[in-house]
Image 1 (cartoon, one colour):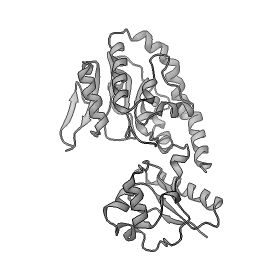
Image 2: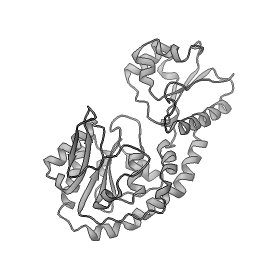
Image 3: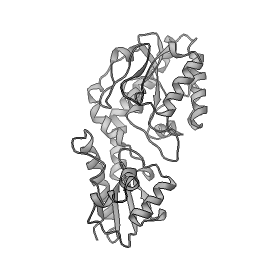
Image 4: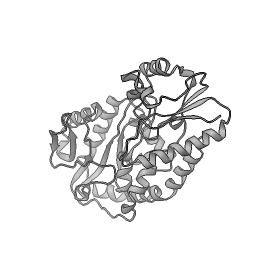
Length: 321
């Protein structure tokens, strides 16, 4: 029997990554149908799942009036873009709205190892494939933050406490989307499709990545992480725990030759403090020699992103089951 499909609520028309989303969803759906030809199942887009299930019990039926919820064996969540953050409330919503218990839910993306942002950025960043963007400035770090998530606010507060703000360029958009915290210059930009102002990139050596999520049992690596790889910059990673290990598993090199990366295993607050300690050391260090020593890693990561990583990432999607 065919798997029932729920894929119209999370990717609005005109969304600039909708085609990538649909291609990935349909690829995975095809694999599911081949693997499970006789299962009574639903394939559900995990994007905006809280809106679909939690805000109004009638929302699900508004989008999917013809879905048969009787005797479902499996609910396959396919969430290419944002990870599904499971909570007791969400599990209750699956049970209350769809009649599906926790043991029947399978999160395909989190159980696999394919990265949506890696695929999208592989296309979007092609103009940077032959990029030469040497560090020529005097700033230690750059940190794009834009949306004022709690861990980003906490990072900036910590940078301020450690007297590090004058050593870098930082941006943060406050909740009203009008007022910004601008420290030194404004290195803010609005899209995942470009690096941003390359003049600002050339001023700053280390890129402090502040990912979308920093806690939970999921992994979430977005374009924010691939930007310094494409831009040939060393980076520190503030995101899901063991995010650096995930990058290493994909063949990228990180910077444990230059600083202690044990912060990758720590809770958010401790990781922020360790990052600041490292920056404090480097704020009084001659950086030119260190930058020269890093160049082989920076060049390797850039080439790996456009080469083996793209091929291997596509293979991971094609064989995600």
